[in-house]
Length: 111
Length: 111
DNA sequence: TTGGCATACCTAGAGACTCTAGGCACAGGC
DNA sequence: GCCTGTGCCTAGAGTCTCTAGGTATGCCAA
Image (cartoon, rainbow over all chains, first blue to last red; front, top):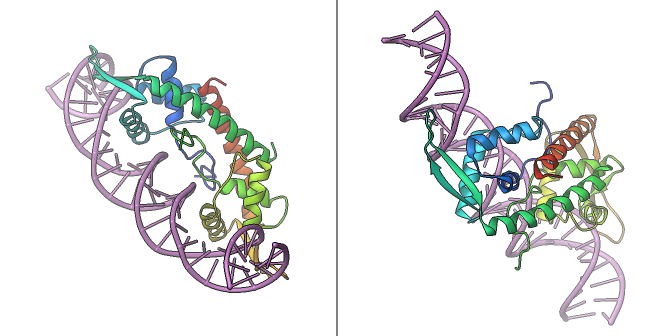
């Protein structure tokens, strides 16, 4: 690997907020979220399953999302997630935090 | 604590890049970096000593910065850090990564 | 029919990072 | 004499990411 992902990054953190954002638009299941994340961000955010599935379980454990199983013909069953009221609140707060952090980081980095 | 820092954030990650950015402007010491970070970001980024000092040691261990002790009159000794060539390279790469991640995250979050 | 690929979920464990909560030492002001 | 500010440090807990597996189904091509 050339200069792949070496060195310090700002992007290792808490990706739950991104999942919350996508789920606020519509119900989705884990595998779908991974693809949406990659597509929407044009490849900039490409999370492996081992990151996303545990993250979803944490969000559900914390009451921010609610999951339900759905059996589909000609495909393995899916677990669809939707935001809870608590999830909407957390999303709003997280968005504020993100904008604040982003501005601060940009200023520090010199645009 | 009311709604302090609860819920998912995007800001928990790798703060070394911010330190690298500040140090690319001029030599600074740990305690000074903490204040600069807070001041420059207008309080948005306020790292405790327990985060910054280990981070500086990691950056030095990885050869991205080089430290030197300086004794000052009427103050405890300070350890000033400067970027190495490797550090400059890492900073450039990190900056690119950050912009890419930021754009992707913004798109996912819906601006 | 048999092999491979895409879909879709899951976990254990290693490694990395943040932060709390301390500690040490010196200078200056009240 | 004591407290605050400066300036460095560490141990340990907790959390998160990611690698590297595993399971199961359906479809298509050889």
